[in-house]
Length: 125
Image (cartoon, rainbow, N blue to C red):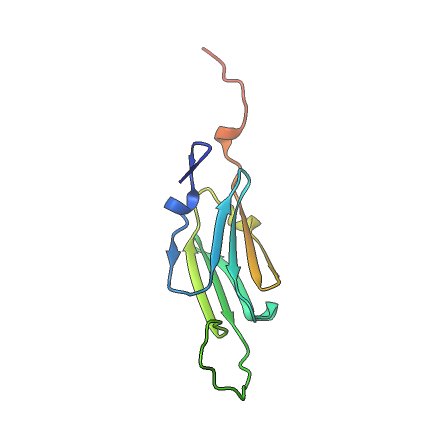
């Protein structure tokens, strides 16, 4: 998909590794990439986000709670979640921020300053 003539970084670079049933949103603008992961039922302390070797990993492991119920349907999976993505080459891993609020983990991945976007006078020799 193309936005303003640029390829969506998720089409090419931000490839997902692993299987998970958590719902995710991915998007970008001129400054950053955003990844939103639906993780209802987890506490902040249950979630670990890290980067290594050009990859972003999210792991969540909920504390086990005993239940007195035998469920006939289970559409909400609160147990273990693990997902890894390859970061786009243009991303700045040092600037990544993660916020968990109301069951949604939002990760903002800034782009590195791209010198081709900077203005400069080029002398003609």
